Length: 193
Image (cartoon, rainbow, N blue to C red; front, side, top):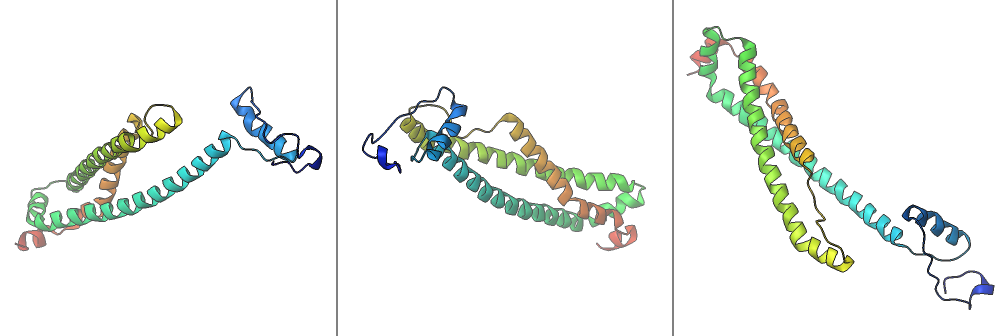
């Protein structure tokens, strides 16, 4: 019924075309469309799913960026409060001749540790959400398709990269507070309390 060729309009309502290779499906589909017929293949559905997946990834990426910005500000704020609370300690370290690089490293390591804890917590949350998706959505979708397996997977390299990235972000957020700790005047720091 999809034919635009009047001579063939009443010949067949539907014709199934089977491709030898999956890679040929799109090419054959295009040839049939050029001949003036309507076509539909699993590839069309796959392209729609891919498009929706890209849109969802974009939304999740934007949410992740906002979360990253907020967590970076949170780490920087935590480190600034830590410096204010330990002003006297920093002053004593300077008076005793502690190298400025050591003071900076001390605060950067603390900030990196905060990033590590945040990254580990985020990773555990991601694994939890992934298992819920597989349990509730995966079984339903795979049941309809007749297949099996998980629809959400988190590879080990991605887990390691995420935690490493969280540590780096924590250290970057702690860089300004660490530099501020280095610049504190020892006399003013001891007088502060």
